Length: 169
Image (cartoon, helix red, strand yellow):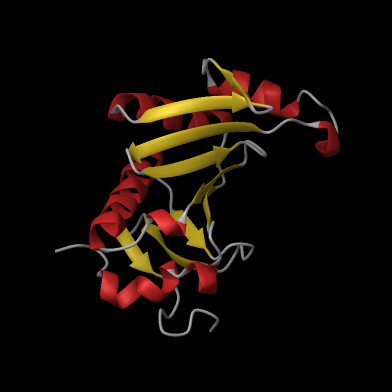
């Protein structure tokens, strides 16, 4: 049986309610955690593309990503490395290294409609959370710190963290 049932959570995946690109995050990370993520992406055989300043680049290491992320000095001058990952050919996750202390990524709710797609997202969160040994949280677009759902490391599964009937509560 799936961790989450579509009929129970579909309002959380409504772009009109949660925005098109809800925020997903793994908190309290290091460059080493980013490297674990990169190694996981390769090991899973997921398609990916690495961009720096919108230009395709070869993905070498998390240390190189961090060096690129902090190369501009002040945040206004920095170029954010972007890693596009397709855990499924029709589902894109976009990781951005704003800082090494968290792994931030977006999912597109327009691609996450129905039980099958929800199952892919749940599996993706579980694989990442288990490998990193950390929770993976998803919040409505622009509402960090108020997760709707996420991989709970202690429960070892994806759980609801907000009321799907009224996510603003």
